[in-house]
Length: 367
Image 1 (cartoon, one colour):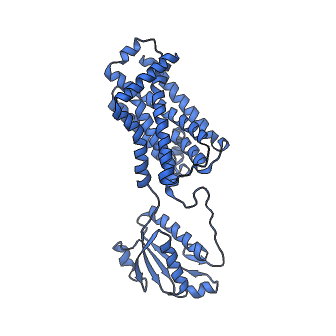
Image 2 (image 1 turned 90 degrees about the vertical axis):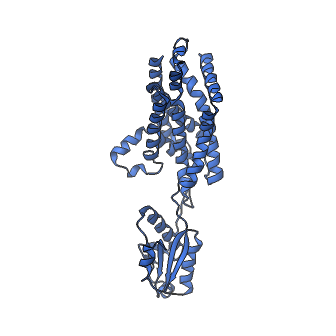
Image 3 (image 1 turned 135 degrees about the horizontal axis):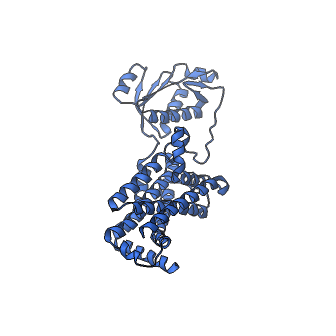
């Protein structure tokens, strides 16, 4: 049995060696996609065009304006004496936000009396507006107190404390999800073409004439791609650390175990698809649709699962990336052990077992 599995594995590796474009795509695609999406996909907003209306013209108001400009998020585009021209500046998109400081700002703050700062935003892009408003709240809070709406209560001091991602970088939140997305898509596509290739080339008939069993063929087809996927995962994780400053606080051994479980499920699903499709084109389309969309939309990669409708929350229970992303963030960002993410590993084991069983049943029928 071991000899037949190894023979099939070597055959598949030789096939990858001859088809060097496919091998290069399997090894390089995750790394290239991680770099492209890692840089392009970001919730951080920078170079926000800011208009300033400083009616106080005091040292306190100037410090407030400097705090906005030194934050690295805002760029001053207009300095005004009053707020009447703001409407035209927003209409022409000269500015995206405006800071209006009242004339009695210094007097009120020095007397420790509540004062008000008006922060005006272009809300046509709600996602950007919410992000910019968060920046403004943090800056004002660091200067004179807590911001409630547009009211600054100077009698109280707010000291925010953010764990695991103190700078609130979206890359640290997104890159682990990107890793799951890329590995899922590439692993499913890779193995979905494995058996179909045998069908199209007519070699499936030759396999039927050999003593090889379905489980042996399944393992022989899966192991090479498991090796390739593991190398791609290691390279992608290294790039995440080197390029995007994603910390790795947890155990690399546990990270490898969880990644192998996730890859096993993805590869098993790809093999299952390959037993259903008759052409590589159909297999590719099925693999892309069944792996990309669920991982992107229903895994918690971008959209929180808790905010989804109950029906979609139930559907997300069969998306393996949901459990891998949760475990990955726990290991990489929080550095916690299996007691925190063990249930996600169990879910990955169950998923991998089911899809590998289905793939084996289908492989038996194919042979």
